[in-house]
Image (cartoon, rainbow, N blue to C red):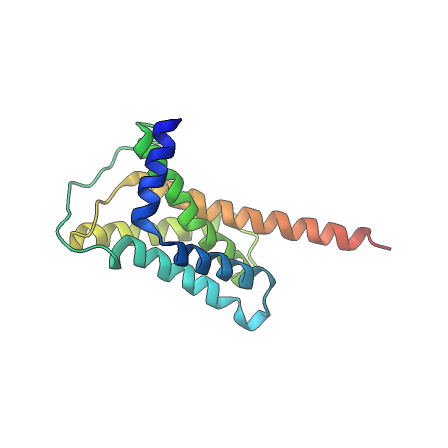
Length: 165
């Protein structure tokens, strides 16, 4: 557990600043509670943040073979990376479900996996990272989790409204 927490902390420092985390939380709050005309901004910000972290922040020169084997718990570093990938795509799933008012979490998961596949391809092509099947899988899970959370919250909200006299 100690190794996992160390890897989680180490990878957090390399991926997001405290200010970026605050912006992400603010974007989520605007998406959840903001007016209808502002709901697309957090969705666009979540896409920008994904592209920024996976491509724009990195300098060219890092390229390995494409990893096509799925390793979810190979070691503490792999597990920490997968957790961060889920968290990175969670806002994408939340905001996509809010923008399109879709209850189709599987479709949003596929959109997240598609965006992740594009980012992984661009990482490999521009030598700005390593294309990894683990990333696509965990990013899709993050997008699905965000969409499922919105569906669950909306369903609970409807139930509460119907129960009020």
